[in-house]
Amino acid sequence: MEQEKILGISDELVERCVRCGSCRQVCPVFNVTHEEPSVARGKIFLADMINKGKAELDKEAAHFFNLCTTCLRCAEICPVMVDYEKIIISARAKAVEKFGLPPEKAAAVKLFSNPKLLNLAGKVAAPLTKLFTKASKSPQNRLLPFNVPKLGKVLLPEPKAKPFNSTDRWFRPKGKEKGRALFFTGCMFNNFYTETAQNVVKVLNALGYSVFVPKEQSCCGAPAFFAGDLKTFNQMKQKNLGSLNREGFDFIVTACATCGHVLKGEYSELRLPVKELIELLFENIETVGSWKLPRKVRVTWHHPCHIVRGQKIPRHYPEDVLKVLQNLSYTPMPEADNCCGMGGSFKLSHPEISREIQLKKAKNADSTEAEVVLTECPGCVMNIAEGLERIGSKASALHIADLLAKAVK
Ligand code: SF4
Ligand code: SF4
Image 1 (cartoon, helix red, strand yellow):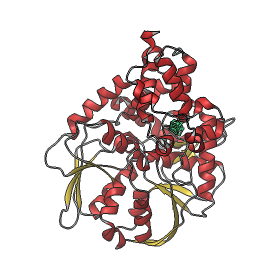
Image 2 (image 1 turned 120 degrees about the vertical axis):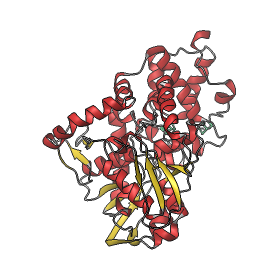
Image 3 (image 1 turned 180 degrees about the horizontal axis):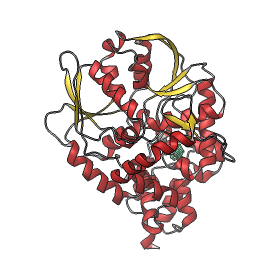
C-alpha cells in the first residue's frame, strides 16, 4: 500500500484533528447529507487511513474528497486549527494522479486553462445565448427558457464576444493620482462579467488610482487548483506571473474572492502585494462616504467564503463601507458568511446538494426584503442570482462595483 500514500500530507497534519466534530455544526454539505464522509472530520480520517495503508485510495474515496465546496467553515471553527485546505487539495491531487479528473471537472479545467479556447467559446456562444435564453432579474445573467428536472430554473452568466482584456489598457483618474494598480481580472470578468470589470475600474479611478489591465493574463488557475490538477495550475500560474511581476505599480487588485485567495495563498513568487477591492474601499472609506446613489436602495450583503475565510478579511469591512454610502439602506443577512453552494466545480459535480445550499442562501437573502443582494465574487453573484430566481424572489444579485459605479463622482 506504500505507493498509495497521499503525497503532501504529513502524519502531523492529519493527526492534529482531535475528532471533536465541531466542523459538523457548520459544514454546509453535511447539513444537507448528514453523512460523516461529507464533513472535514470524515475526510481527514479517511486521508489518515490511506496514508497509513489501512484504507485504499479508490474511486469511492476520491468521490468523498470531492464532496466539499472548500468553503473553509470547518477550518475556521476548528479548535486545533487543522489546515483543512492543504489536506483536501493534497488528497484530491493524489486522486487526480491516480484516476485523472472527473469528466465535469476536466471540461471546466480545459476551458478555463486555455484563454484562446475561452475567447473562441465566448465569440460563438454570445449570439446564441442572446437568442436561446431570456433575461434574468440580475443583469449580465441569462435564464434557460425551460426548467431542468430536479434543479428548476438554470441561470448562465452571459458570455461576451470580446474579452475585457483584449488589449493592454490604462485607465486614469480625473484628479491627482493616488497610486497605480495592476488589475488582475480573472476569467469571469474577462469573458463574462465585462461590464462589472469596467465598473471596478470606474470605482478604482474614483478612489484616485490609475489602473492598468494587461492583455497577457488568464484565469488564476482556481478550477485546476481546487480540482487537484496541480500540474495545470502551476502552468497557468507561471504564465500569469510573467505578466504580473512588473515594475511601476503599487499593488495588484482583484475583485473576485477566489482570485484574491489564490493569488495571496498560492502565488508566493509575486513581487507586488495583492489587494481585494473591498480592502481598498475600506482604506478609502471617507471618499466612499462622499458618494451618493441616485435613489434610495435597500441592500444586503453575502460574505464570500474566499474573502472572509480564504483571505481572512474582517467581516466589518463591507458592512462599514455600505453604511457610509449615501442613499443606501443596509440590512444584514442571516448566516451572511455561509457558503452560497457554488464551490467552483462543486456545482457541476454535485448539482442537487449545491442547490440545497443555494436555496438556503437565497431564502436568507430574501428574508431581509432587500432589493439587491451585494457581494464581491462573480461566482457568488451568479449562484445567488440563480437561487433568487428559483425561489421567485424580487431581489437581484450584483457585484458591489456595479452598485458603486452608479454613485461615484
Ligand atoms: S470546506 Fe466547507 S464544505 Fe468542505 S468540509 Fe469544510 S465546512 Fe464542509
Ligand atoms: S473541528 Fe477540527 S479537530 Fe474537530 S473534528 Fe473537525 S477538523 Fe477535527
